[in-house]
Image (cartoon, rainbow, N blue to C red; front, top):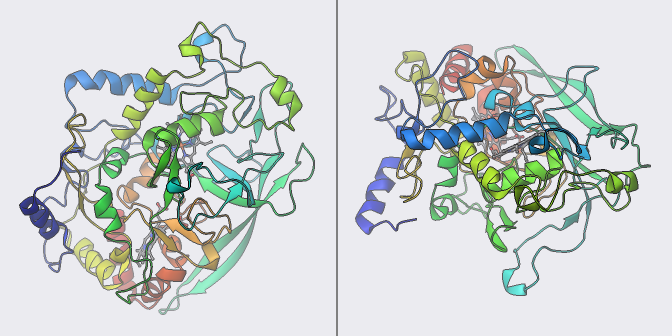
Length: 480
Ligand code: HEC
Ligand code: HEC
């Protein structure tokens, strides 16, 4: 990362200041991913394009990464040695099964198995990841994997190994009446484990349901200078606006030190590479240079799992199921899924909705703009004005959204502000709408009505809106 001059920093500060003019679109607003943005397609491929500013030579790596992202892994031993090693326990057989068309996943339909979402599991207490006290993470909330089920419930396993159980969701309908009399039925999920195959889970088991989030713009989020993210943190709410914002600090396996968390729904992963390697290990049971155990999530208590065949052989793939070169290609791909251009930022209703968004103080967390760092080796992400509508910080979102399962510094009530770019293309890409960390909201309005805690005041302002302004707000969000 190349340092910014004082003059440049001042210029950037002026560019990213929140707008006060809602009569016309802002300069460059049309391109939320800067020069990496692509023309929005009206098809399910809308999230599957590469950064528009990518050179022809680098397109090849994107295509190879795409191949690995779409690949269906199989159990070992198999005749297709290059694709074996799945499991023994797994949630899905490929990245694309969860990040559907590079977009988000969804809760299972009634009677269907859960694929594109899973339950993270833990029990309170346990060891800390650092050895040296100098590396300690302040306000760390320690948890450990469940001694039998591990850190995640795998609903699937290779032949001969019992799957851990099935994720169960019980929905409860909660009607909300808006100021104009409109009634919106929210559905609140309760998660549990059906048919736990390895005995009853620990009585103090912590469960956090996670739906796979969309994959666009991730490299740009990674390229935001850390200082610019930390500048928005206000843990003690000094400015008194009711919105605090805390950075998650997490353990980097790659670097052996604490780092700012940016990825995952509680910002539990520091880099795209780390998150991708964790997905290979936890979601598919595949070893990489970062997580080298080919048994993935099998715990010592799961003996059939520990005895099953794995796909790791000394003579191929650096002795791993997924070698470093493959992990790097998937990481490159994940960095370069492009953000589509805005469709109609100048539409009068959209502009009014944008004003409502600012007046309701949504932008206190959904921070509109950043400028990425200058990066020598990543021309696609380097020095771009981007519009993710997220501060990448953690916020207390109230009891309704709480999972009561901490992650590094994130409490059981905190979540990372969801980036809103691409929001309006959700249905085009995935065929359905499911928002929030567990996919409980089936419309954008429902997602907003679930906001509590630090976002309670913003949510209440939306409840009080006239129908005209509410429709305008939704039109703005759909234009992102
Ligand atoms: C079983 C479903 C599933 C599979 C398979 C899966 N993911 Fe994910 N992915 C998720 C979920 C759920 C999250 C959110 C994780 C969290 O909150 O900790 C996520 C998050 C991510 C993120 C961070 C996105 C963000 O907005 O912060 C990246 C990057 C990612 N996955 C890459 C991959 C790659 C690469 C693969 C294949 C190697 C993969 N995923 C396979 C479910 C899946
Ligand atoms: C205090 C911070 C905060 C404020 C204020 C806030 N949000 Fe959010 N928003 C979040 C967080 C955190 C999430 C993710 C919550 C989750 O997944 O459970 C989120 C999620 C969303 C989502 C769902 C996105 C997705 O991809 O699933 C939408 C839509 C949204 N917010 C819109 C709004 C609007 C509109 C406003 C203003 C009325 C607003 N938010 C105000 C923090 C905030």
